[in-house]
Image (cartoon, rainbow, N blue to C red; front, side, top):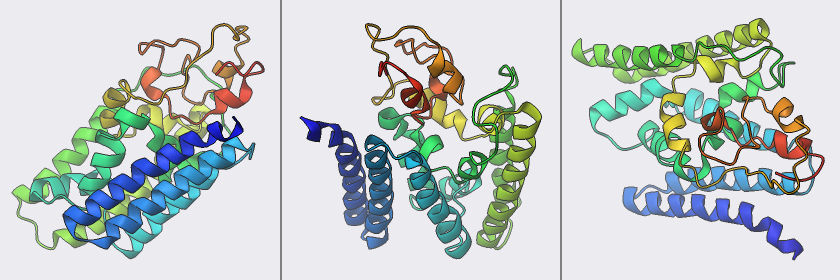
Length: 274
């Protein structure tokens, strides 16, 4: 039946509504209901548009969610949703804002939807994806270890603030959000042009992937290849911005934990094998 193709956006909406209602009731704060309902609706709309052939379906979610988190939550509401904000709330023992965001989108959520955050919600990638190098034009570099340095640096930075008993931590966190984003965008744009790859920042620098990669290995939602249909044309590999060998259905496939579910491979397949 034609309606069956809409099961995925419906399931995504149900998952986020379940999170929204659960947090609303447990935290006694209606904000969480509206927050996760908005994100769920945005994602479901994006998937619905993709299923109906809209070319820029994923960009809809990127802009709706990315702008909301960067401009409203970050700049207006002054919540640091970067990794420094996560460490800050973790050290204070408070389960709200960035800790909830990380738990849902980057620590436990990837067990369901892998690195969907990177493909549909990240406000840094939302801008980088508008650069000219949609697919890598150079071989992947062996410098992914840099992400562990940036990960450690963010932890050390926040830990040092607590050890020094810095005052007005909220203000420091807000400015670290501003400065951190400026550095991320600058590094992302420079790397994109240097390596001719829009997603170079995601592959080599982004500290969030330290959480995302191991959890996405066990992801429930994965793109799989129908071997009976596949003609090994290689178009899916050329279209993939993350260098994933999507024709290998094993969890150990090349760069498998890098898949951001962008569906570029699905769109490029001439036999609908993905």
